[in-house]
Image (cartoon, rainbow, N blue to C red; front, side, top):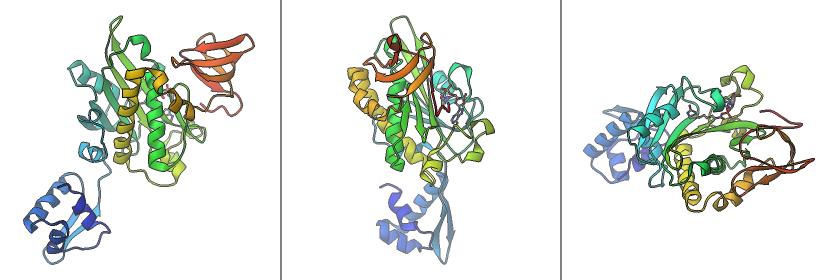
Length: 324
Ligand code: BT5
């Protein structure tokens, strides 16, 4: 039996006698007491008095492994979840665990990061208990050169999880920013430990702004960052989001490992918001032009005055409504 029937019985916050709870969920009163204790350990606040029974005062807003796992159907991703109240960087900790032999699918989540990493030495703002900071250990049997498009796959999984949890269609800005209303709600950082022809492990780090409000961001980010809560105008269940994200990740990762980027390209293209837009790229010869899409290997195709140019890595700036 799960704890859910018990939580259901206490839903609404009204007093409910021990006998009534026991009857509703079909167990003895002693078993109810034990389950109440288990829920308290998981962070639920439940009042108990001899005369009136039980009353649910509040649930935890913690990314506890048990909370996330209730929402995961994936078999490998999230089978092992390490939770920290605070860490410098979930990517750093996941890397340490991977070096010690952690299995593929091992997840590190934290309530806050003191040194959240962005790409190229930039930082990721990580206020506590509001968002999702998650890193996962991957051990794909692919060549190091094929790994770059894996972060495109991660962005796709995030976009699907955003749709499932809010009904909102986000846009992916190549390679892996996820935007709502042209503002960044997610950043992805892939770090690799490899030999010349073999990937030892990868750490896929994903930061998603879930419940941050505008004032939770530093002033310089307020005009370019957003969160699911801001866009959907309601609080997001962080554990449910994390669980759903792990499901989407495992699904698309398996497709990618089996068939490369072409196996997920149609789904990626449906979210990609750059095609048809005029951009400037920093990197890959700094082309300027109109985006024509993504190649089957994950490179961005930009039509310039000299023809179509492929960009494998770089920073894309939009002309016009440029925010990032
Ligand atoms: C990224 O870098 O977008 C990758 C961020 C990855 C963060 C995750 S959290 C879990 C895991 N553990 C880590 O230590 N990291 C990963 P980049 O493309 O370089 O973007 C960084 C830039 O985005 C910054 O320079 C800011 O302008 C902006 N930024 C920083 N924090 C942000 C936030 N919370 N929301 C939106 N934009 C942010």
